[in-house]
Length: 295
Image 1 (tube, rainbow, N blue to C red):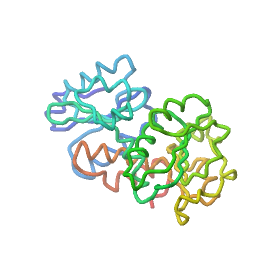
Image 2: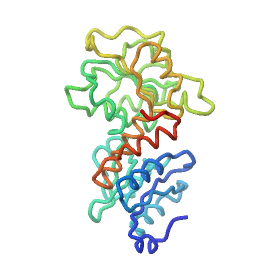
Image 3: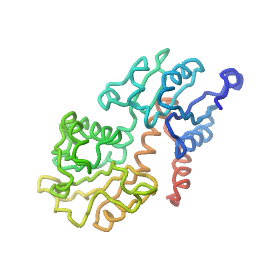
Image 4: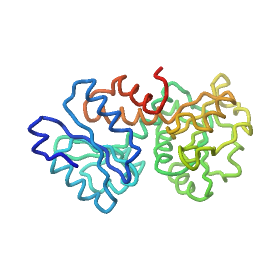
């Protein structure tokens, strides 16, 4: 149950939380509450399961109870935009916001999935390289926005996109200037970076699946840096090592797990709310929860 505004004000505790429908698997409370505790911030991060038809009422509650920030997940990221006072140009470009924060008296929306996706690629030069994006959902939109708004010296030559349906990627390709591929032709390019945003490999019924066969990989295009290590990036973070990443590693690719994007988007949210980055304790708590030995 939502704590009353009076109870929170009396304790001086700032309220934050995550909203989505459903929310059973969310690791966001662990990430942010660990951060608040480690940094000595008097704040509490809760879970609010809100069905789609109740979203406008929920946003009114955020205003009424002076909730200081909120993570927003499926299926509310798109429907949220018209309910806010301000939406960042980036969230507008992606067409989705995953973060609510206050700027003075204005309730604002941002998309930190873009920053989260790009964070582990900070030291990777994609200039002149080809990239293959598998999938076309909300996360793929954030990926596409990140790649096409990257600094010119780090922008890929081509971003190919394919989906098993052979249809859902076409609007995405048109909107972001990507090159659409038929699913059966997805092994034709020679990408420096292959990104999985499909649910294939996710814990559950598709866990044994992969959207890509690395043994069919062509050598890298001559235009890309001959010394660059090819990369496989899976935005799925449960399990941490999907079949996609396991096979990519065996094929000699550097692997980036979904934990990187999840931590990166949470870190960007935490900065918007507190002005500080998430501490190492948050990262360790996340790795422990996902069964990875802390590095």
